[in-house]
Length: 432
Image (cartoon, rainbow, N blue to C red; front, side, top):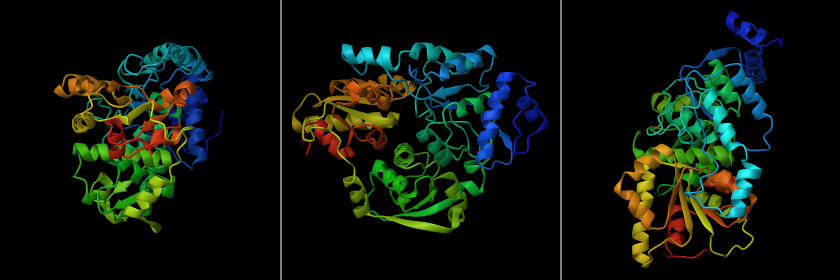
């Protein structure tokens, strides 16, 4: 038996020694070793038991995951609170693919998707619609409270839970999140500790207008990397939580900071829960400062590489919604498209445009009067993960245009600010 460095309770030692089965013992050893590496003193119980998994895709080459899932199922193990998972990779009815692209998706890359989803259902997937990176939105309902200890993975979901909800979760990898959800406990270190939630950076926003959320998050992430920023000056532009526009802004800013850097927690003065409660007490002694003004936002934006082979050609596909859009963002984009098309005299958008949102958000939106108006613009509505779409080399090689810094970072997609993206899609301007 592995000899833990941390202190374990008698029950935890029983699990580790195999008294509750060999599979549980293996899982406990993984979590204990994980905690020991980071200096955890103990394991702590989850106070909110619904998990969120990053591994939502039945990728054929991920050969180690399937025997693991089989073993969990055979042992009768299941997450007590269930779990949600990241978006599915494919949805051809709403995001088209030609026959060859479909073949690559269904036979080569995600050939085990249906089988894998069946496995997820047996170990705790909440339901068939539990696939979204924005599980914390009210329509989806996986919402831990302030101070809750959770076992999640997915960088954008974890940073939102930690920062906006005030929950406690480290940036876990895939499988670690599932083991924690099944065993109902996680090692206590990092963001689960009071000291680990303090800020290493004081980020001072001095822009003259609301900075683009995706670019601000990108700037912060590239500067602080895995450290914790305490952001001042942003509250001048945002309404108090739970305002829907503020939720969307912090969602997108956090996702960019987590993907362009490795931010797992941020505090926004006068806005996020711990910042409202503790203020500057969250700053560590010896913190660093980073000032973000209009010039810095523009510098960061101009630094993004353009990786298209033909840089001045029109885009072949546009993606909006990485992370998934809120209901209000869908309504807002519908209205932007309408106004823009009316100004240019066009009836349809200039290229195949996909907006992505959680299945529950999509269903709600379909019942609104905005849905028919969005469809009239020629846009498409899906619940896929745009990153996984671009994992198909035939699709990823297309000229993809996006306002998502996460999608830009992980693919060859070209980034455009919201207004620039809108103008290109309604025909006001061309790619420069």
